[in-house]
Length: 359
Image (cartoon, helix red, strand yellow):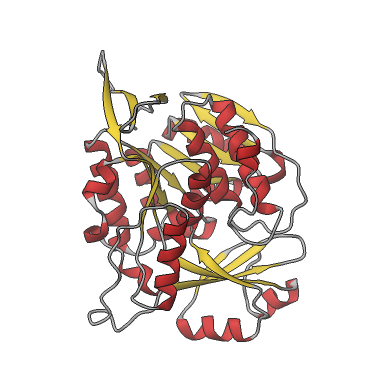
């Protein structure tokens, strides 16, 4: 596991300069970056709708989970729903948008098709001030796969269940890992949902290698317990050998270590990582750094829709980290961001609460 650097000096006119402690080194090195955060993930359009629990049972969907589906089933689901909102989505993209609203300099890599949904996704990112240099999928090579879409079904308790057709996302490969963008990014943030295809796993490892070769840090969100379950050994290898900062909720970290006991999962995390932020919904979160644990209280709010809560938490935490905040401050910013997101429908912020906080 590579060590984690937490220091920054701001105020330089041509970029921010970050100090990195190198393992077995006696001096710090200084590196200029163009971006604070680079997100890599599934580029998806979200389709949001409220449903009753009985609907999920009828559709054989596990409440609170993410299920991969094909195009026909995506069409069938949307035909049986009353769509309330259609918006840009994808876990890492959500994190990027929230981080950008915190003032972070953000870039994103992901795969869209040359279609209307892909154009809207691209426009959405750029309107939020995010650099998106990825080339669209070549339809002549891939049978005209469309841009991915995720059907997000929210039950009355605010829990979200997702059914995702990945489409163009499945063709994100090592060729899409842009070295120049990675080298210019302070933290490369990887979305666990993208980890399903073997070539995407290879892309993750290449991104991590390039980042470390350029003195950058790599963060990973486990994203979903079922995704973790499908690729547990590969995720463990990634966490132990390539990741500097790990994000996970209670279900995800327990799935990674095959236990239902959160405290046991924490002990495993302490052995495998030097830095992790583990969320526990209404119980707040736990930040692990260099063998020490910091508990962070949740920010009370009325839960309307939990879609994007973890994405926003990661955004607030990383935005704080890249501006030299203390770990308790990073945890607080993360909790505030997550609280804002779950107070309304959709995974994108509706208020500028971080501006009100004087961030």
